[in-house]
Length: 196
Image (cartoon, rainbow, N blue to C red; front, side, top):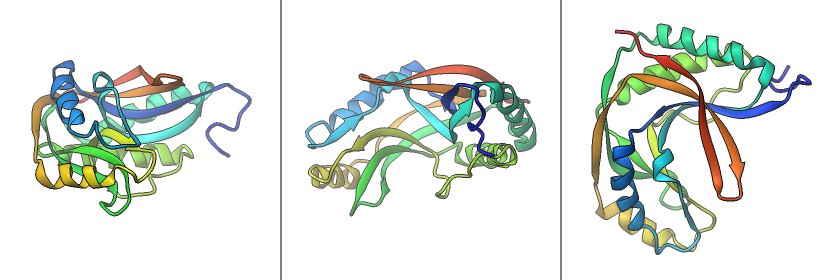
């Protein structure tokens, strides 16, 4: 049975590490280097996050089970608070066909991967679909609606190797995503503190 197939209303949700507000400005500066690419849609730098697992539509009456799974996943991962560095540039799925432009992760990538794997194990046990692609920790900077701007994006990705800053990861959050005319709005609905 699908996690959202009950008669309960559903919310669109994912688990992520939220970035501190002080990284919004360097993220916005980096996005400005892509602004002239036609067909590009930048994300809101004030809502920047590192997605650990995307759940999709979750029935409201299953949110408590998801919250409990998140708590188990944090214990399972065995990851205490750690430093994370946002640096570098990349794209999905490739420079030939650009769909997403992202900032990468240096320090902290191993811990993020452990959290992702633990969350996937717990949420797939609840019936959620696993990720379709290998996990690459990243912060989404922009999405491309078509290929008109890919030459500029390729040029920026090849020429720039930004270091945007570091922060301590002390928790992950279950986040509700509400789609609006102005783009998605993210609201944390549960927090999973990392244990020392």
